[in-house]
Length: 254
Image 1 (cartoon, helix red, strand yellow):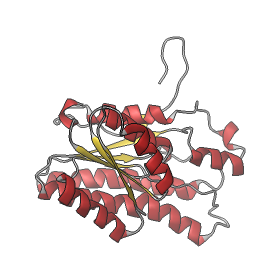
Image 2 (tube, rainbow, N blue to C red):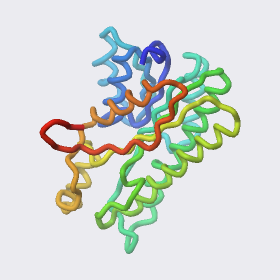
Image 3 (cartoon, helix red, strand yellow):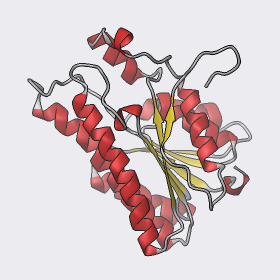
């Protein structure tokens, strides 16, 4: 992680859960972090808990990543104030219990607007900024095991579809960058069920999730550690989709 110390990272969905854990890990590694979310109070509390320590600086920006102009404004500010980002962590995501048989269009649209469209807009703006500022950066998409196979839960398939789109978009972004000769890296981290507000809400409204998923629950810090591990790989090393599960044996836990 030494190569990223003093550099700038943008983290979406940073106010809680996986996003907040990633912000903490990056800051402790000496990275300056621009933390984006819609919840201003939570962002401020996160920044205040870190900025009085000998870590990277936390900058907070209230941003709705589904609003293209909001995203452009953030990247413009980072360009002009901080010299552009070296890292983008696309963490913002949403899941709703919404069946293909009787779900609401507005729920489906929200899932795709956040998980797919916003991720793509942020990735595009990161590419433009990194290229303009001659930064060989790293874009990491927080995907899901749902992006690689169907989960067994009823009314969870639109989320599946959005995350499988992320898998395709991650591969597609990597391919387009290679065609242009860019050295920007793209990685995907695909956690299993993780102890976040999203999982709590799903369990609340969809109790069979507890019994139909055969994985131990990950902690947000587990996912943040995977992000740090991905960033720590050498520039010439490509990490393919990184699926994360918590397993339990006598000698190993991950």
